[in-house]
Length: 316
Image (cartoon, rainbow, N blue to C red; front, side, top):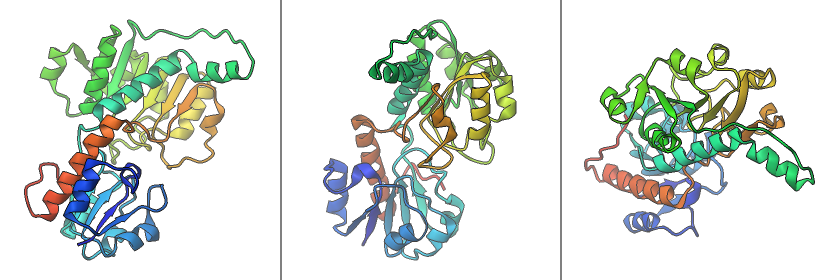
């Protein structure tokens, strides 16, 4: 048996109980030599003789899967699986699983940190102060403001709890929203357009699919409050980045926080030229606690699928 392991936090030298458990199960482990998400021929070259695959943010296309005849199971290290062609995997008899909820607290905290940073211009003021300038910049407070959470899954719920500590009015939009949960936790379930219109701050916690691709487009920006602050800690492609740039330069959007990009790494994005944009390298899940939880869950999922046992987190 042979297994490919590509998440950067599960590489040789980064000891973890989960990786030891996997190596005890299968001594023939192959690792990602690049330190970056894999795709195309590089991914195929590593995966083609593997039975199992513990996947990071790689692009697992139909073409890649078709060239890996021994592959039986793909275990995603993380909740999102939009980069795996699950339909093709199903047709080839390959099971795909994920780790929902394992990184929810970590991602929610990063998103909330971005909200605070943008509201008070912290990164900009930090750089100006380091460069010898003494800037007076007037920010805004989160306390008592309205937060709009688009996607009230595990991460959105954790973020709502953070916002509750700031006495924020919490709006949420989700096609599969749990009305009872909202009532119990003081969250207002509203339409997408109502959320855009009434929110001072907006955070995105959605999967990327046909219905969510560029859901934040020119019309969405037009419907937002003037100078609203927007944070995306989910998937790139949900925001039309070119349109976001125009909304920022026109003053329609007050600030933008991005932990995910349509192309990753994003290289020389024009957004990086703006002082009211902060960006992180898809780091929402990068805490010690989340890494351990995801690794444990991803390894257990993979072993269960390869052993033919019941895995409760198969997505295809």
